[in-house]
Image 1 (cartoon, rainbow, N blue to C red):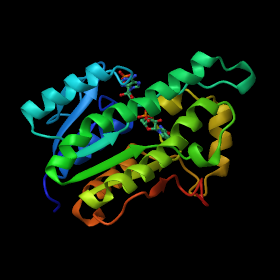
Image 2 (cartoon, protein in one colour):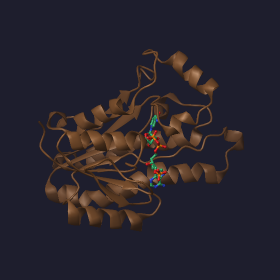
Image 3 (cartoon, rainbow, N blue to C red):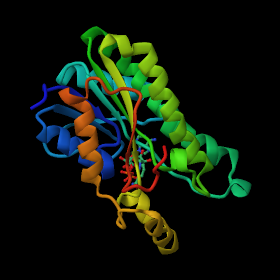
Length: 236
Ligand code: NDP
């Protein structure tokens, strides 16, 4: 059993974030989730936050600090897609995905940093994607935002690694959630044909990796990209 921590999961009202929050609660952690609507799982503290708005993130942290204590494990999970081919992609479609997925992560991790340093402990877990390093047509905005998280985690590791703070990336493959339900049958069939495991992943399988990274056994793992993708992206 790992030490009980204060864990924050962004976008914890559904999908992968909800499953990570559930698993962290089962692991004995005190868990807060951010949500724009809806609630996190039973036993979590739900706070409102919009990833594109630093002030709302600041307010969410202040509320968590008051109710649970300083955040020790940060899971930056909230993210969006706005898929279209490069020739059709507007600058707004590009920058809005970067703003949520990459700058949103920056806002959250930056707000957490003082507390992590003060507590002399930190686990930063960034939810990227297999397409960060594999590439994906129609996802230049999304894959760019997700690839940048690798540089983010590795620079953070070099900045704060000596302070008992780790930063790692989870790169999920095709996981059954609302996000992937949006893909056409044709796209789903094509992905499936490329996945060595010959099936899509479940949210609990991402939660398992996050649980491990938050736990005592992962203290010496930092700057890693952990694929949870049934073998789709081998060679990362
Ligand atoms: P969902 O679309 O099911 O959920 C996305 C979550 O992010 C929701 O909680 C949503 O909140 C939140 N969110 C989105 N934009 C914002 C914002 N601007 N401010 C605050 N919260 C926001 O996605 P998944 O669970 O499938 O994905 C979770 C993460 O995993 C994402 O980062 C995604 O890129 C990544 N991922 C998913 C894969 C998959 O196959 N599903 C594969 C690889 C990576 P709200 O409900 O309010 O919209």
